[in-house]
Length: 216
Image (cartoon, rainbow, N blue to C red):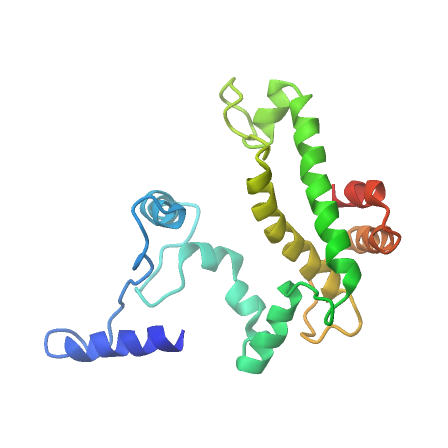
């Protein structure tokens, strides 16, 4: 971020004679290939969001994006983004355990459980009707075909996706711990907290069947 900020100020200084002292520079797609998924999102999906009547239009180019305006994460996490230390503390929520750091039950046991969860999900989808498969992606359902939602079946894809899923569950469960260094707590319901306790108990007991059930 520091490098990007320096780059932007350098660009703005270079064009200072022909532009205002400060103007927006879009670097989101710098270095991305034409077939990059994020590039495709920016080209195809983002304009639809920006043009939607469901969200307020930005008044100036310096406003936050429509998606960020809806989620308001920049305000929700404001007190945890004050300096490098608070940001580093917040990032510990997604830092997976090692042999010498972190809670071991959130490491290998959770990794194995998330892999089993994805396999279990794939099996359930494989035995479900076309209506269920469509509803998993589109509700209400308008088109009668099964091309909308496909479970991950390639083990290489599962291995990659598991890391994201494990980090997400890790962040939620770690935020519930009393010694959570970030101090951040996810806004969970009482029902969520009960499931979190049950999931932790299953992970500590290394009970994979219960763990997969709690992940569902």
